[in-house]
Image (cartoon, rainbow, N blue to C red):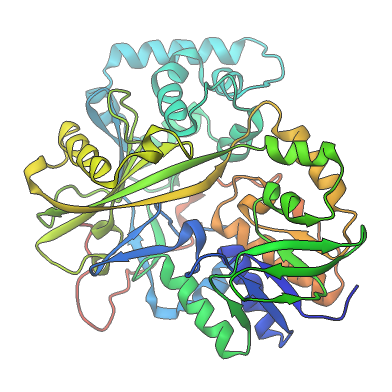
Length: 488
């Protein structure tokens, strides 16, 4: 392995974590980031003083190592925030986490009885090994619940039928969720004995981007070499090692030692010089991603609705999720008389939604905000549009074979490690992405042999914990400004 600096490809949560950890160890490293800012999908966008996320990014983890890093970087700027979210279903807002009384009122006892009967039938019937998301959910929840609560939202988010999504996605994201757990959580929710979905979370005062911007500043202060606006253009290799990393925009080239890449798996294959075998190239080109568009609207009124976010199941509107950024943190909105909300439209790069004019998307978002009953259109003053490519790796029928083909070939490059969500083509959360980077740094600097691909392969990101074990059960922090941290 070469004696050059560690090359870090990508400045999202995984790449920045690697750069920060290396700077702390006083290890020479160069980070290449295509954008002029850091944080990737988890960055915070600022427009005229309004701060908004690209999707909601709660800071919740079961990894004490990751949480310690968060607190090390932000200290008192990392707030404890109350969670409130609802589901918009058939024109009604249903509390989420569930409560029995709300379910009876909104769904109705007759429908709940049908769901219970369907669930009972599913649990009594031996089910073959699930191949698709639809098979997996139906076997555990029953056909009725699947059709009512899972199909429409899942297909809105992913843009494919639930029969095309692999069961691995469900197993990773909702493996330990069951109707019994949901009902138990709903019944015991007021007593706070069981939390099927956490009721508090950590959140940077100025949004998730504050975490990555602070981490960047500290990395540079410690001597780290960070090259923004420098997309990687080629990865030269000799079949055993990556021997050169080339970048555009005058960022030059380096002869690296270890290489830690959070670039999309397919992109890495395209950058390799010389190209790998045709089968590997074909597998890379076959990987699919779901993209999305965030439309941030400034709306007159400080308390439009109390939720941090709302999941929109209703198929008659195109929006999939709505964020209320004042409820995430009051410091996200500079005007006490206004609110900033973010409407998320899941799409494919190049389709009608992605290609629409910004003005048309702002108009659509304002109209749908009114249609679902959250704010009349005349209160919307202005809006901004941000397009996010390759936001979510798709677990389609062939993804597993394609990833295996790529992984097998890349493992022949001894100094290359893939990390992060897109680097592994795995729907990781930010904490798992950061953990992959930590393990990669250990491998590069300490000679350990952590299997990066095993991080979060078995452990599932679910949010169940007993009250006495709740990681954030402490008094909400109020910064020195004295401004109260209220939900909304």
